[in-house]
Amino acid sequence: MNIIFFGAHPDDLEILCGGTIAACVAQGHKAWMAVATNGNVGSPTLTNAEIAAVRKSEAEAAARCLGATGLIWMDENDEFLFDDERTRLKFVDAVRQAQADVIVTHNPNDYHPDHVACSKLASDARILSAVRLIKTAHPQTPTSPELFHMDSIAGLRFEPQFFVDISEHFELKQRALQSHQSQNLWLKSIFNTDLTSYVQIQSAFRGLQTGVRYAEAFVQPVYWPRKPVSLPFLQR
Image (cartoon, rainbow, N blue to C red; front, side, top):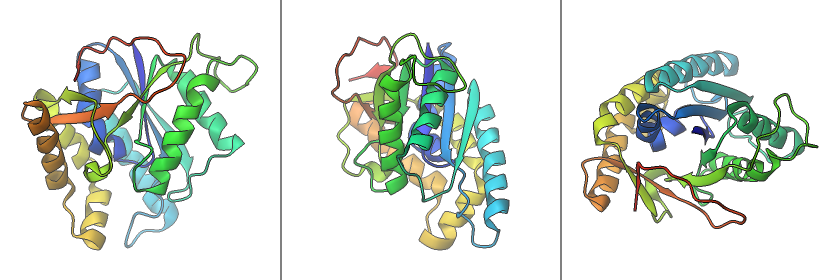
């Protein structure tokens, strides 16, 4: 199965579903990581271009760590992700590049405007990716992929429907996060937040809810038409 994970920023996917990406790969699925923005404002010292290059390199390292099939770098400006025709077509083409059976993206009720925009763009691309007369660089998918939303930062305004037990993949998730050294420094400088500790707390809390050591949480939104998806690592 081909699964595409859309994150608004470099490191969002590692934070919210890195263990699930590793679980997908371990079960033989093809996991694509698509990053919408280039992180070009996330530094206390570097220029926009310099930090964007650093964050792309970090995202590539994290994707390799998790065993992703590919990293799709969409290169929109950080904090300025908007739903317009040009950007929508980028998302459609990313789904087509992955020939995705399943899309995973942000919870639309997340607090961050880039996360909300990414959620809408990825969700809207679901049907459009199968429409032949919408032209992009890659050919249309044979059918519309199914859609899941991942947890929000700190679990805010999110009620889980499914959990993935990531206990055996948690160390790999943490190693992928450690690839994002620039973001760790940035978060410490402006929020006094340690990314590794924060992720351990959220993963342990989701694990507590479902009876395992570490877990990640998801929902499948209501839409139509829809077909069943066999993802055995998802637990209710």
